[in-house]
Image 1 (cartoon, rainbow, N blue to C red):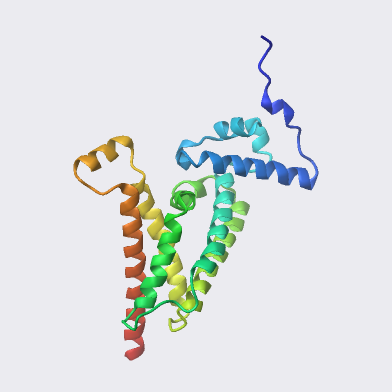
Image 2: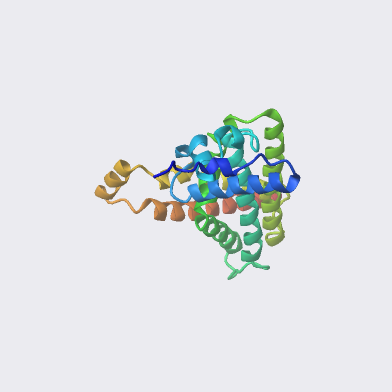
Length: 235
């Protein structure tokens, strides 16, 4: 039997813009595929390079770090979610005349749309704690600009459905969405040992607990802010 061919030998250094974009897309698609069965923290740059068929040093020719790869993927997933959310949120929102039913309906739709996107939740949970730790100042500026634009899009979608809210409140809610997902998602993905103990103690399945908690948490935030704003206006 002859030597096993090295897949990396088939990749030559991309020089034209189209070739560079194709390499970057291949790297991002590989990272996306690896995230289907493991968390970000368990994916090394070496493993990613092997999967895509490039040497580790070659991957760093297209992205400055492992973290930059996953932040770029995060932005892509974030924008895709916002595109879908704009079609999921009806205009006007359903309401039965009871106080704050529209806020509750919007929070539930936002929460359920996030539950349906575990990859986005995983990347958001790793954003501040892991992924923003090994990037250059230039990349950080560009990523935070994109993240801010994504938050602005969510705030604009909320404001369009709840026009009675003060201008700052939808932006406040958009920030709360990220904080709640980032804080709750790790608990939805416990180790096998912790999952076993949770079952023994009769706790609900972690993913189910995440979904219920996110719905309740987002509704509580949005309704609470709406009540606060109404009280402020009445002063």
